[in-house]
Image 1 (spheres, helix red, strand yellow):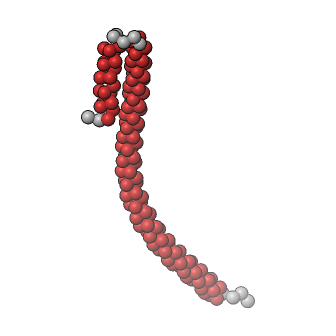
Image 2 (spheres, rainbow, N blue to C red):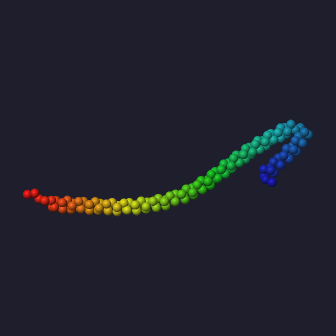
Image 3 (cartoon, rainbow, N blue to C red):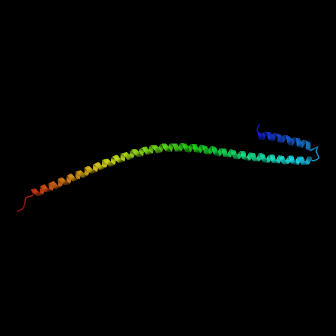
Length: 138
């Protein structure tokens, strides 16, 4: 039995005894008035305790909701972290592919420039041969 219950039980006994003896005492009305005030005080305390208990229950419910929301956020964060790691790997792979493609493009560009130079050289040679093969007019 808790302290509050023991105190409440003792207070009830005291009130009961006081009310029984009040009728035989000259100040019985005063004793009954004091008992009534004690009853009102006790009722006020019970209402206050009930209000505090309701608030505690509300706070516990809110705390539980916050705990559950936190767990959900932690799970979402873990999933997002995994996704981020996967995306970083994909990005690294794509960057390597892009670099490789750029190098291949540079090689093809150089080959194209060389082909262009060869074609220009052939055109100049053909033009020179054509000029030298033309009959000279006298």
